[in-house]
Amino acid sequence: MGIFDIFKKKPKFVDELFGELGYTKFKDSSKNFYDGQVNFQGNLIGINIDADENGPTNEQKEFFKKLNTDYNKIKENIILPFLKDELEDNIEDAGLNNFDNEFEFDGISIGRIENEKTKWSITYDSKPMRHYVSIDFEGMKPKYMTIDG
Image (cartoon, rainbow, N blue to C red):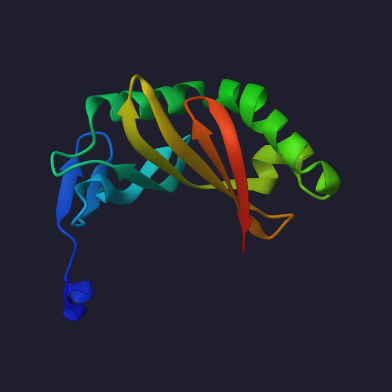
């Protein structure tokens, strides 16, 4: 990649579920990804999908659909308990008691799916903390939380 390659437009890819996506290629094709915006839980959010030139796989699409369908269960049973543990020192100011009003969806990233599992993440804009909060998962198990401003 030359210095002027950064000014090239990304190739566009249109997917029936995710819509128009940009495609970013690297010499190491395992790092290639698609990005765009998608409707999730009634909000337009950013989407990042690790995939090759053929586009997101059927497994990734099904995973996204399941996240969207099961989101309330995932939020109540996995996300909120994880955040309460991670933010216990800041719990009063973290906005967890009114999560849906205090945390705004920002994006979802979906990795490649292997053995029916994927590494993925969800990012929120936390109004009380004035930071973005990302939770990294392996399958449905949260592994890490990152807070950035």
